[in-house]
Image 1 (spheres, helix red, strand yellow):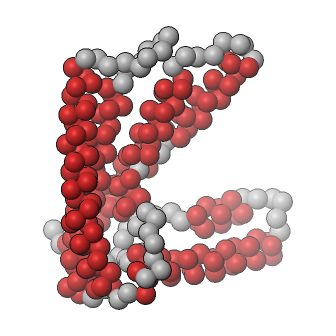
Image 2 (cartoon, rainbow, N blue to C red):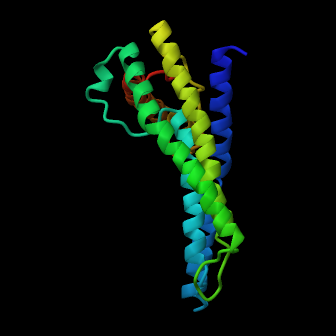
Image 3 (cartoon, rainbow, N blue to C red):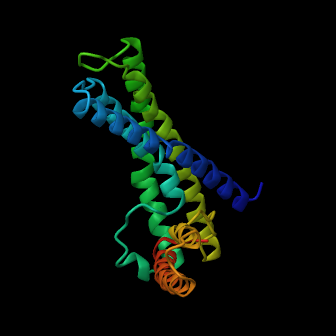
Length: 222
């Protein structure tokens, strides 16, 4: 297996995990809508809904971390970073991954597993009138840490490869916001073709400028 294939395999795995758990946003919406209806229309609020919302949102947030990292989507202060050459960027990233990322994520995964084990042993539940199990949610912590760790190792390999070649290797391309906008406009019957084209062209120009800056500052956008 070539290095590029390894990187894309890890990127694809993180993408599948992130997109799979992104469907939790639908479950969150249904829970909130159902609770609002029960609370205000039926005057029958649910005791466990608040805890369930927190667990679902926490799961969504944690399991999307590796996907965001694979797309170089985490926020960074790129005022100085963006002006650096790729090799300098890679060297800086590699040091930061080794000094901060690896110890932090390994500690998260290890302690998360211990945290889950203790919760499972006591069959931990929430403290309310209708308690729900907590240990399945705590199991998400080490799982999310492990997935993020794998993606982080791939990022370190990407940095090492950039140090060797002087250029960032391309990442897997995911659907961009512009693709969604184009599909929505194409299916609209309320906007004429000239206006559609004008909006799409302007949006593409903005997106290309943003992508160029992202490529310069984070490296490796496909």
